[in-house]
Length: 453
Image (cartoon, rainbow, N blue to C red; front, side):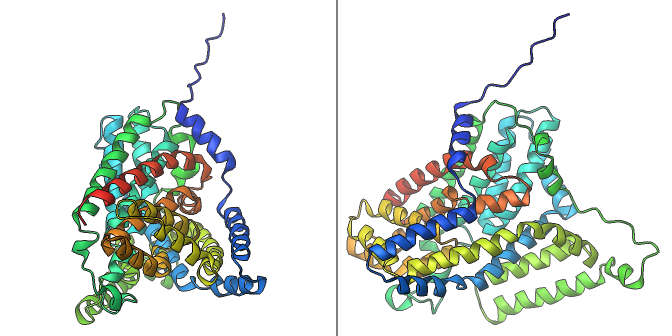
């Protein structure tokens, strides 16, 4: 009896594009070395001496160390919080609501965007969890989800943080005493992240991600079950029973220690916001993540196991941020940064400035993995260039932010972080993410050229 022919799913054009692109994408460590060679050569060509170049690299290498620690806490705490049973049950409940493939995509994109809007690290740390749980439930229902493309879609939905509650530069210039206050004063959030242009950009991009995710999803079969490592990484932490253990182990399993720390963290937040009248920043958000992680897990024992599991994704930040800090030093302390920014700012007018501001923002973001750090370096140039061509400072900042996140969408750094959380190779979904990079850039340029802000 002749055997039946095996049906092999046809690869889509998007599949072939993604597979082609990743052949030329180095890992993030290799990319940082290549960028160092390019920047070093450019600095020497612009007239810096080899000693100047060495000094710039030296100055930059440890410059992001405090921010690296903050970022590491953010990712590890966010990942640990995501493995709390109560939290997973909440996302799992939402994952069971859709009944069609498009409903899965739309609800997952909305959830990922909401996390990112409230705080960017929630999008990066919880977006992969959303992708896994929604894809797992879709496969159980027989809905055709291409997991790498779906993961890239949820990753892209997190881009809205650029105009969300944790957007670094708008929060900075809304705070009294910021480094450009004498030049531009204090600019309220109503003129930046809550301006009509920023709100329109968030709405249009989120809608575009939903449409692209539904329309472009490859039909070739790559279900969640093909990635057991990712599924395992998103499982709640299993704890063995504590009967017969020592007194200290039984104490760690009780809620008392966690509740004491939660109370102390609540006092910290009260003092920060009520007594000092301080604003939302990365430290206050990390304290909130601490609080939620201990509250949701309920005891020290569960938190320790969750943090142990989550810390596997931390090495990328610790190592790569240090390497990128050296690159930022070369940009900041040689003629490379000023020359690039000056050239682009003088080559524009009121109509073309948003496009060129986004372009230079993309260049800087490719080298500097910190929105706050990018504004510190590029802020003065952006302010002066905006005034020179006759556009508002806030339009210059918001269009620069388009480029800031464009750098995140086309460089491997944050893909590596997300892939590390799911025990995957970032190249598995990197190529699909470039589609959303194009969408992000086009919508941002149109909105911040024409919409009021």
